[in-house]
Structure formats: structure tokens, C-alpha cells
Image 1 (cartoon, rainbow, N blue to C red):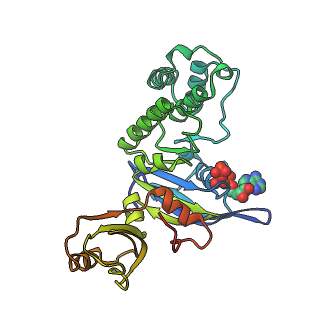
Image 2 (image 1 turned 90 degrees about the horizontal axis):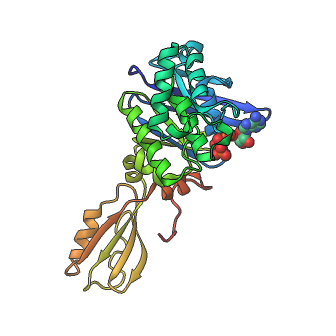
Image 3 (image 1 turned 135 degrees about the vertical axis):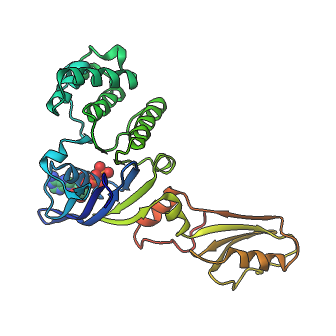
Length: 309
Ligand SMILES: Nc1ncnc2c1ncn2[C@@H]1O[C@H](COP(=O)(O)OP(=O)(O)OP(=O)(O)O)[C@@H](O)[C@H]1O
């Protein structure tokens, strides 16, 4: 495995009789931004806590750079917990310096890094304030600074975008991209799928403790069903019926909306449409990550037959 890849390999976890994770496997490569998505209770936080080592798995292994992750290696992970973990009465600057020193940085490095992230995250005029006096969004910026202040080799962030205003979302996105660009594997969970689709190199979808899809958004959407919209003014109703891998969803005057199986030949559809006369519109629409997600996490995962889109 490439140096710097975080590997989650066959992780299982039970809470009493409840199976929270059942063989969860994916990797987050060096320099990659990985979006970890799934419904409430699917197992994202449990997976991240196991990767960090604050929770023990019942089975499976977490590796970094090809080696089973050790307690020492875990101190090089920057973690943003979902429940957040700051000292409410400590001042922002003081707290960040303290956390950096706790991870082994010298007083000078800790001070420099803390000031650097405070200014980068727009907290300069809050640096002497107690954390508990900040707005929730600003507390979250401090929490991100806390995950970054010791120059981590891996970033694991549990819902870092929840509750942020659009400007803070931009700041957070920029910082995560920047860290990934330096070769750090970055994994974060989120329910904001449009953001994940826009930002991430790869995405993993977890459903009740099992990974149901891992890949780039392009890979996931191209292997899924897609829709084709065809306008052929001279065509008769039913012209597309019987084409292989194709189902007619709607016929609206001269426009027909088709549902295509993954791998169905859209050029054969075009040829059939042209055989009727001129074709004035021929467009393929891939599913969005949100649509894929709905399919993947709903009962009977896969396509939803007959669903108009
Ligand atoms: N300490 C615990 N004791 C018992 N069950 C737990 C515990 N922590 C989590 N669970 C259960 O394990 C499953 C996975 O929970 P987890 O918090 O990992 O999900 P999640 O994907 O992070 O959810 P969310 O999106 O709501 O944050 C859920 O069914 C949850 O109820």
C-alpha cells in the first residue's frame, strides 16, 4: 500500500447485541479528500472513533502507510469529534497552544501554529475569548484549528460542516483541500451531499454498518442507471419500446424520457431515434450523489424501478 494511505480493513463492532459495524473496508489515500456518508446511525462515528483509537474494534485492522496503526501513530491524527471536545472556559489561543504541546510540539512551534490557524480561520479578534463565549460556528472553527494545530499526518473529521454558515463552509472546504494537497489523507463525514459531491475525490456510502459503495462520484454515477431525454418530432409513440436496457419513463408529445440500465448503449437509442426522422434533443443525465444515496440506503438498494426523476 502506498505510504500515507489510511486503511480501514474489515472493521467490526458490536454494542451488546447490536451490530454497529460489519466488516467495514475502505481506504483514504495520501492527498485525497474522502467523503463518508450514510444515514443517522449507519456507523460513521463508530468507524472514525475506531480509526482514531478511542474505541476498540471487535475485529479488523486500521493501517497507516501499510503498518498496523499504533498508539504513537494515532497522535499524528487530527480529529474533530462529533460531540466536540474543547475546554469551554479556556481561551482560544491558550487552548490551541495547550493542545499542540500535548501532541509534543515545542512551546514555540505550538505558539506559531496556534496563531497561524487562528488567523487562517478568521478567529483573530476572538483569540483571547473563552471558547464558551463564542457562537457555535466559531467554536467549530476552533475545533478545526484544534484538529490541525499539531500538523497531523491524517485528518479524521466527524461532521465538520454541520451548522456552519456559507462563508465558514468555504473556509472549511479551502482548508481541507489545502491539507489534502500537502499529501494528508482527509476523511470527513457529512449529510450535505451536494457539498460532498463538489468537494471530494472519492466517496464511501455506509448503510447499517456495511459499505455499499466506494468510488469517485463519477464512477458511482456512471455505474448507476441514468436518464436519457430524446426529442424526435417525427417519431410515433412507442418508438423506443423494446430497445435493450431501456425503459420508457414518459412520453410527452415529441419528447421521450428513458431510463437506461448501467452499460446500456445510448448510441443504439440515438440510431433508433434518427431512424424516425430528425432528432432535436438528445441528452443524458447522470444521477446526482443525492439520488444515488437515496437508492443505496433505501430498502432494496439499487435502482428504484419506475421512479420518475
Ligand atoms: N455507545 C453506544 N452504545 C450502544 N449503541 C451505540 C453506541 N454508540 C453508537 N451506537 C449505535 O451504533 C450504531 C452506529 O452509530 P454511529 O454513531 O456510529 O452512527 P453515525 O453514522 O455516526 O450516525 P449519525 O449520522 O447520526 O451521527 C447506531 O445504531 C447507534 O445507535
